[in-house]
Length: 382
Length: 217
Image (tube, rainbow over the protein chains, first blue to last red):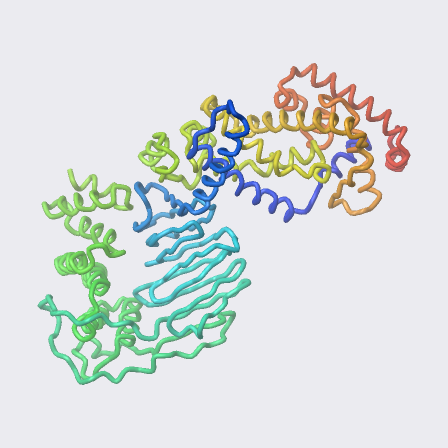
């Protein structure tokens, strides 16, 4: 590059900072989206014959359309999912999936994640992370109102990037901030906790909310009810450990040799969930089954316990008939539950080649035509 | 990647409010089809993918601090792109297509600025200097003078010169983007270089800088 003019041209090319350019592009992005909406929602006015009167009319109409567009609820889109997303659940199945909102906000779902779009407004949306892990990029705005619920926890957002994970079986929430800040509320969270910067927090539900006990339908579940429970302390302490700003740990318990026996002393739901989790990690099917059955009989925990019992029987105990029973039970107890797709998928796998399997496949395809088991369901339904 | 079924649904041309399928990774071909079907996601994907190079091209050809309306121009490029999307062919190269639109807009802007400067006796020298990340005050001034000199070129030559010297495009690419023949592009660049060298030699700051850099003014 001997030509000084060429050299000067290259220097002039360097221009402003990346931040300035990014901000400019971001500002234009918003305008461009509005232009797209206007071009596709309102017809262009024809050339006015009475310019004055029509100009006034155009201004009035323009203001009206601007306000209409401004107040219109955000639209949500997701890969391979048809219909309105509001009120719907999006499951990433075995793969990944992205939910996009019309303001540019994105939610990237990791495998095995289920997000329910509770509702949208012109300023944001209410979402429920029912299971799994999601990376959220919320477009910043002073008026933004986003709420992401994960079990009993709630994350209030105005504009930021973070990763949120919720494991309903463990009652554990993880929040990793990438940019900006959020306000977190929920069990064991000290008040309204502001999480910001690159902080990471993990909380675990100290005591699961108990559902009203129901008549136990299963022949397997022990009817006995113990003395009134001596529940463990509900609030766990917040620890400062290894970059984990706040980590609420529930009381722990171990699955002893008698874990499979009916409880001699009443055990809290929190302790039982811990026992389930630990047993599953140790691949102790009997221990997990006993704790789950006790949760159902003693604490009336329905839905998720049935699903987990299905999984324990299928994966750990090698008893497909029992697994089928429990997956069916889950679908009865929680027909619109977040694990319905997985339960139906398991039923297809467990009953492959049978009439019941074909029926399950058809049920699956009716509800999840693009779901992660769709291919298996199509081949099984024929 | 989206399934074939998802793609077929994606390309089915639903009205924007009903569009519900957004591939995670989209090819240019899918974006073209989405644009033709007036899908919202395609417009978003087009902007997400190409806003940066088009913004840079506009900034390089027009000078980023010399045009308070750079955001308007960037917006215009994509709005015009949407307006003409219905005529797109499947195999069109999206970036080249957008660059052509950006070049037209840059050319019109240059002409408008010249007319406005003439009407208002608004000499290019009075414009704010061009800020660069290239540190030194001396370089900043030289860059500002370069843009001031370029602004005195005919718009057609200014565009070709800036695309070559600042944006760094190849001649063939410049010819395509400016919708002129290769020989015309070369001729315009040659004329522009001659003029710029002449004006630079007459400009004390530019001449000084070029002499320091070992160039022949």
